[in-house]
Length: 474
Image 1: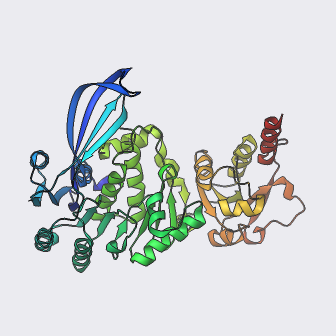
Image 2 (image 1 turned 90 degrees about the horizontal axis):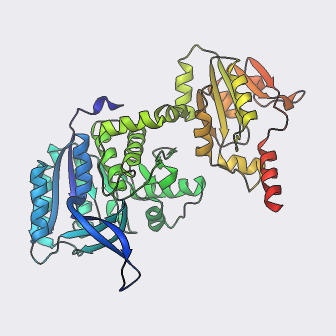
């Protein structure tokens, strides 16, 4: 995927520029005046924030970046302008509006933890005449860029009219428009390429609370349909990232160490913008953005990410291979249809992966060259096993299965039986448990061979759950 890291795409960022100020210190006492920590400040740093964090991330990935924004005529805006010059950012439009406070967020950090934050800023919409000047400038220079990014922090630069006009002009030029949205009314973002709300923001915009995959699909599809988006995307925190083009796809989260989520959304937006500017596929873009976010949340402050850091993270965590093994049925069909190897298929819930499962799957692999595991979705497990199941989500179960060296691919299916999936994939061998001896096996009429593998006695998810409940009751 990373053969695009030297492409230097041209990306225009429009939005609310801020100054992030950090006071770094130590704490070894509590104030006698109130039950609060006393921080002994040792160092102070200043960085671009808000839309500036998107800009920073794009620069660290190697993009050529232009900026359009409106700030106040004050000391803070002068600092921002100096930083932009030092970074060699092309300042397309940076208007200093009188009687406006440039946004400044001050964070106090001790022992890698944020203690408190205080802000100074103006949040009202920019003046109408300034907005017209901004749009005129955008019309003049938009054709020089490959992607437009709107970083909306609700500080007044991206008003309803400005958003609508930028999207309209961009669409006329076939320029992708990616937006980090703000507020509960997303109507001003209609006809954009994609938005990047989190679960809470998506709920506020649609009124659909995301509690499972069914509600997630309703929510993400509602955003796509009502706003006429090319792609609909929702970040799911510890669950990963979901996107919807013609179907729902979830990319599992891969972060391990989380110190600070500040700016993680900006990193996702930047990574997506970079990849789409390089004409990469949306799924590859989301996977890349997910990895980029995993790197930055392990840092303190509004951090950036480089290709080298992402590649190092992949090597360190061994996640690249795991992700590549979890496929949609369409992806798997394409892979298998071009292979002349013997395909083995088995399926199950694999709710709590145990030694019996592992030995069963290892034996299944011995019957051919490629082992495909069909995994019942959460909804399917609930129907088959009851409302208290599954214990582990389909994404967690898929990742655990894909970590087994003898499992080549995992595909999630939503039906109660795998018949349609077997018919679609056309494997050579179907493997089921020895308890099917003398019984009809769903899908056996679609394959060349049926193999029954005896389960290890005393090993079952149901048994494990019963023992846990019994011990708890004791």
